[in-house]
Amino acid sequence: MTDATNDQLEPIFTRKGEASTARYTKIPLLEMLPETAYRIIKDETMLDGNARLNLATFVGTWMDDNAQRLYSDSFDKNMIDKDEYPATAAIEEYCWRILSDLWHAPDPDDVIGTSTIGSSEACMLGGLALKRRWQHARRAAGKDTEKPNLIMSSAVQVCWEKFCNYFDVEMRLIPTTDEHPLFDGTGLEDVVDENTIGVVVLMGVTYTGAYEPVEHIAKLLDGIQERTGLDIPIHVDGASGAMVAPFLQPHLPWDFRVDRVASINTSGHKYGLVYPGVGWIVWRNVASLPDDLVFRVSYLGGEMPTFALNFSRPGAQVLLQYYRFLRLGRAGYTAIQQTSQDVAKYLSAGVAELDAFELLTDGSDIPVFAWRLKPGHTDNWTLYHLSERLRVKGWLVPAYPLSGEQADQTVMRIVCRNGLSHDLAEDLLGDIRSETALLDSLQAPIPHPGMPPAFHH
Ligand SMILES: *Cc1c(COP(=O)(O)O)cnc(C)c1O
Image (cartoon, rainbow, N blue to C red):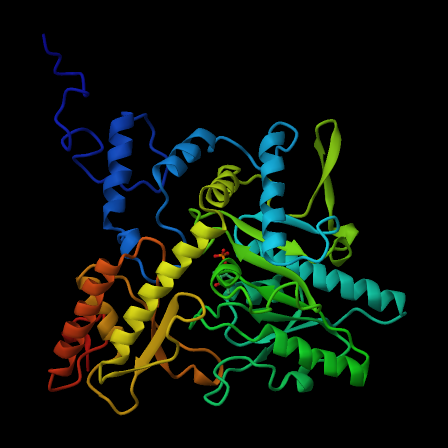
C-alpha cells in the first residue's frame, strides 16, 4: 500500500523545499522533513572549497577517527560549566600546564593560563593584562593612564588592530620595509615611551611564516631600560609558531627562557592540530595577570578563577587538544611538524627554480613560505591570475598584498599542514609549473581575475 500524500515517499529532490528555492532569510512558517533540511544545507555547502586543499588556512582540517569519536561524544559540553563538568575543567588545566612546560615557564607552581576560542581571544586577554599592569603601576606612581600604546610590526594579524580599537590602546606600528622585511627591533627606541604597555612579537608572521627575533628584541628593551628606566614586557603572539618551535627549533630561545616575555598565546587549532575553536594563553607567573581581571566561577563547591571574553564555549575542542597531546607526545608532534616542514621546503625549492618567482621565505621557521613575481618578469599577469588558475585545478592558494611600506607588493603563500602529503605536494608543484608556463605564454595583459573580459577597459 502506498500513500501518495506521505511526502517521505516523494522522490528526493522533488519534495517540498527541494523542488523550489531553499534560501530562507525569514524563518519558514512550517516544519520540513529533517532529511530535507539536512539535504538543503549539505548541498548548499558543496560549493565550498575542499578544506584539505585549502592551502590558505593555518587551521586544522584533518583529525583521526578517534578524535572524531571523542568530538561527537563531547560536543554537548560547555567549557564554562566547570562545576558540572569538573573533569573537562581539569583537562583544560592539564593542557595549559603542558604548554607552560613546553614554553619553559620558570616555576610550575607559579604559572597561570587558560583556553580560549582561538588566538584572537587569547591576544585580547594578553593585551588586557599588559594594559591593566601598566595602569596599576602608573596609578601607584601618581601618573595618568590616559594614553596607553602597544608596539608591534605592521605585519601583525588583524586581531591586534581589534584589540587596540576595542580597548582604546594606541597602536604603534613599525612598518616593514624592503631593508627590514621582518621586524627586528629597528626603530623601537623611537617609539617606546612611558605609555608603552608592551611589545608584541610574532612567532610566525602571518604573511610569510618568518619568526621575529624575540631574544634580540628583548635585549634592545634591556638597553632601553638601562637608559630610561622603562621596563617594557613582551607578549609573544605564537598563534602558529608556539606549537612548532618547541619541536622543530628546541634550542631557539623565544619563550619564557627570555625573561622579558610575560605571556604567550597559541592557536590549538593551528599547529596544535585541533579542529577550529580552541586557543591558549599562558602567563609567565601569576603576578603577570592582574588579579582584578579574574572572575570566579563555582567549581566543586568552591570557586575557580576564569579570565575570558566569552562565557559559553565548546568544551570538546579542549578534550581534542588533550587527545592530541596524549596520542602524539613530543615524538609525534615533532614527526608531524617535521613532515610538514619537509613538504614546505620541497615546495619552496620547486617554486624557487621557476624563473618567474623569488622566495621571501622557504618554510624553515614554520612550515609556511611565500614568494613573489621577480621584478620585471612580466606586465601581462599577476599572482592573482595564478591564484585563479590554481583554483580551477582545485587548489586554494591565496595572493595578497604585504603590509607597511611594502603594501604595493603582491605575494603568494602556502601553509603546509598535517595532511598535505608529499604526493599532493608534487601534484601542486606540477600545477604551479604548468599554470605559470601558460600565463607566461600569453602575449598581452589579461584582465584582473574575477572580471569577464567585457568589463575590462
Ligand atoms: C591566526 C593568527 C591569529 C588569530 O588566531 P585565531 O586563532 O584565528 O583567532 C593571531 N595572530 C597570528 C600571528 C595568527 O597567525
